Image (cartoon, rainbow, N blue to C red; front, side, top):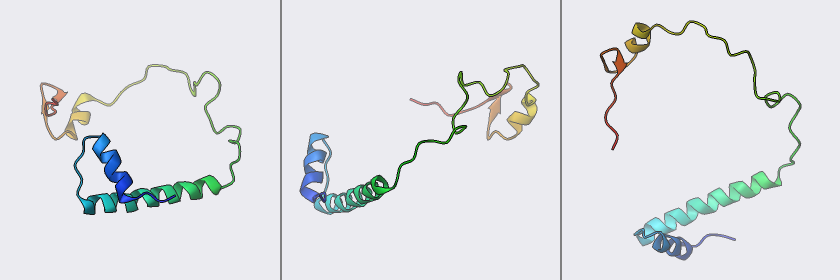
Length: 93
């Protein structure tokens, strides 16, 4: 069942989005392509996962033991900006 531009405009209206007719047509084509691809994936044979494809019970892969880490000056050498021995990042509001 293809997605029509009218369907896209209805969903956009419910989401309080303003779309032009050309945007609705473009999104309808894109959504149609995505749904076609999903239909192809659904038609593929599904086999259970192989043993060993997931972590062992408990999720531990190795013992958690302390070990030396990367020295601070080497880690900060790759930073675009640093200050007082820390990574400097722009504020996020």
